[in-house]
Image (cartoon, rainbow, N blue to C red; front, side, top):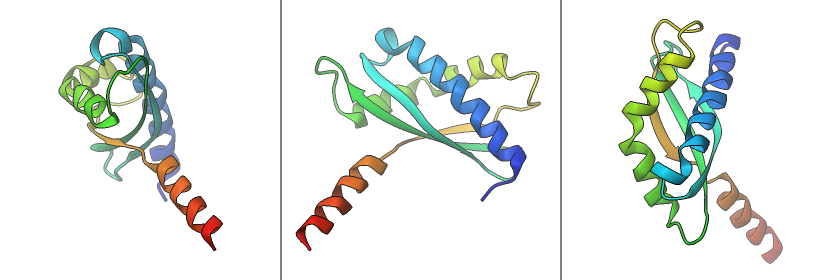
Length: 116
């Protein structure tokens, strides 16, 4: 559990990163519909773990392919993010992108419970 400041910064980053990814989805991310499900900030505010959910539109590809595209643009996302949150943060945290597999785990557990 993080501090209130970590949670607020995480929410701000989630909103701004989501807007950046949605705006560039057609041109840069091979038509993936990308949702930022959560952002967790380290206690020193130097690292942000960004969990992404992917939904392929028109056979856009796998979530792993979408993640690779986002990671390739990571430095540009961070730079654009810095311009948007300059009033809130002195230094923008390093962004680490991960696939959010919460829904897959939910389905797995649900199937196991049905088998019981």
